[in-house]
Amino acid sequence: MKRSMIAKMGLMAMMLLVGLTVFVPATLAADEAGTEAAGDDGGMGKGLIAVGAGLAVGLAGLGTGNAQAGVGAGGTGAIAEKPEVFTNVLILFAIPETIVILGFVIGFLLLGNI
Image (cartoon, rainbow, N blue to C red):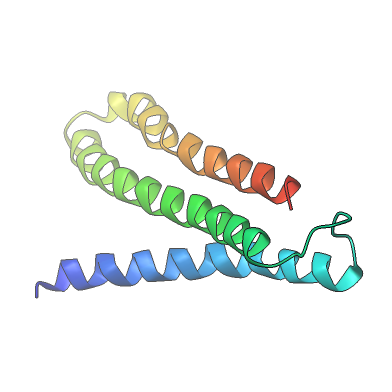
C-alpha cells in the first residue's frame, strides 16, 4: 500500500475515534443520570444516535482535511508565484471549515434527541 493511503486511513480512524469519544460519553452520562424518557428502555436507539453523531463529526472532519490539503498545496504554489493572490487563497482555505461546523451542528442536534 502507498504511504499516503495508509496516512489517510489512519487519519480517518483518528477522526472517527475523536467523534465517538466526544459524543458517546454524553449518552452514557445521560443514562446514568436517569434522564431518559418515560417508557424508553434507553438501549439500542440512543447508542445508534450517539454513533451517528460521532460519525457526523468524524467524517465531516475527514472531508474538510482532505479539501484543505488540496487547497493548501495549490494555494502555496500560487502565492509563491503571485503574492497578491494571498487573500483569495485564504478565503478558499476557510470555505471547507463550514463542513466541520455543519458536522458539529448535526451532531449536537442528534444529541438533543437522546
